[in-house]
Image (cartoon, rainbow, N blue to C red; front, side):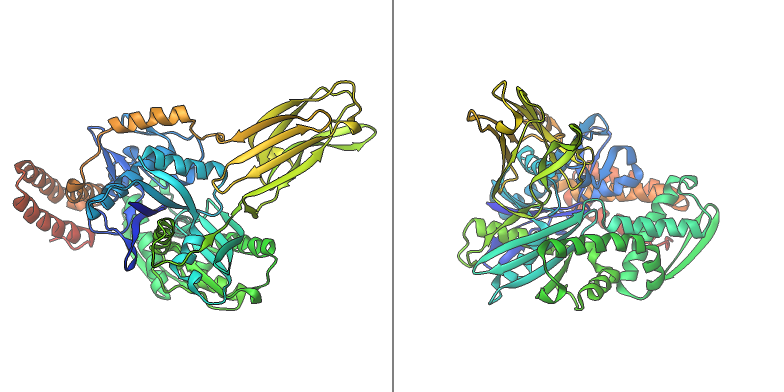
Length: 565
């Protein structure tokens, strides 16, 4: 079975394409959304999803979330007795999703189409593919999240084609893509974005504004108070997405604190973030060489796009209301399912060719003559410009600095700065030149070839001799090698993971422990209820456990709404 997966910063989804179209598959708790969170219990067993998210409060040193932002880096997270790279944390999420899909369908998952932010770099894309390999599945195709959203909205089925802008604001990343559909081809013309801008940043801005207004410091609050405040701020942001005003009352630092905010106040607080949203929109339009009147539709996706300020920004910039009738949390997952269906050549889907672009400029470091035979090194010379349609191959001719130079060292960079020190070094190679030759007579051709799988090949040719040197950039800085992948797979297979059929019980315990951390007044009741629930679990009587879990859940709901009696 080939599945489509939305591997998100905040939540992840899995599904497949069936006779009735894209079908998202619920997890063991019956929810389509699985929180992208991982935790480790006291026995060093892995907990994934909702229970892990609850443990972010009660066991912060053993829990982690939002690690999608670290993909492509060599950052290591210590959880209990384990140390995980971002690819491995993502692999644990994928394993959980795959287990849910296999349990629901009775079929084995062998391959997946995974969505990634359009603005992900080569190293981040390779890390995502490696996460799939660590999870035991084949990931032959990555689909850009805005392209997946376009498929979910059925833009590929519209007669006559058109040009579309997709605005995708998720929990941790922001993407803009401009696509054109013509004659069965969906072509990406431009992509831009910010890998460190999402709904979490808007929540953080609200939190800081609340603390400033009340003269409080986050560090001065108890851990439980901070956790309650963060959850209440999330609720406040959600209320603002549904109405024009929201309020909260909360006891902090021994005093009741009240706060009321309207849409205008929220907009003022978040104006710096809104300006960061505006910049990629303007850049994508410039790169696509379009004006607002040439767009046929604008699509809003991603959970954070529910905020009214997103629709207002788009309406003011482009003079029209955006499409947003699909559930923004599910649109990209549904689009990934459609892409999976296309891969299996499902009979109900028309053949659509999806093209992609290289999201970043690729080039080499050169030295620039400044007069009197003096050179300044470290100048970035682009060979493949950003937003070039892939696959693409480009060649540029260069010359050695000195007459008689025997060797040229080539450094390959990715980025948009004119100075290589501000860009990302991807790799290097050297090539020998014929000796005792004038610089002008000793040209060097450097060819970059970038394919649909994000693989960059660099070929340097000494024109005078025909000598060639190749560099295939499969391994970016921070990305695992083939040998390292094999070793990591072996380690992950040895890690114990809580079974799916225990997820409801794990969630109840994690939720109770989180409430124990947050609500001092309810600790005695929670302690007694937890002890009783654990004893019931030891009975291994499914009927008794289910009955007690229901009562336990009612108690937790009363405590959570401050109405315990």
